[in-house]
Length: 254
Image (cartoon, rainbow, N blue to C red; front, side, top):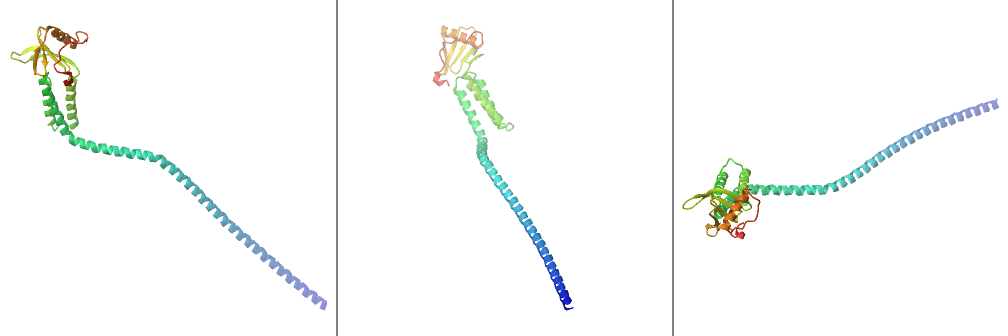
């Protein structure tokens, strides 16, 4: 009996130990599982942190590349901006100059017309009435408020061009020779160097003397040259040199 009781106690003790061991193993498994879960969560957080870091590094690299690209673009754009700034400054200066010119233009045109009149009155008196009438028309033009400044300036410049052209061309026309007995003659003008007349019969003629302000008779040879000059201007013969006395010294004919 005693042995049986001992065996029973030993068996119960073994069962108790087995149960304790089983409980301990279960706890160990649960702790291991919990540890694995914790490790997995930690690894997930680490992976998530690594991904965030990688994203930030990628964003940083992109930002650096964009910064370099903008720096290159700014370097390329800087000369263009400088040129545009210089152009704007030039245009601003031109506009300021234009504004000042517009303000001064009426006075300038008046001065040009006055000088033109002085020139015509002091020049050889060929086509005198026609040329003075042109100056008179300019004075009337300047006083007309209905015309804009650009048109007035164009007319003034055209009148000056017409006067300058007299010094570069040859001309012939029939007109009245003033005097005690006015008569119709043929006039020949060689620029502003020579001004001549010839009667319709070709027998008499003269050369204007700017120094004395009157006509000097021409000899037979000079009359022949005037007749030749008239035919050249009228395209009745080929151009050639003319041997004629001048009305004024060449250095004073400009």
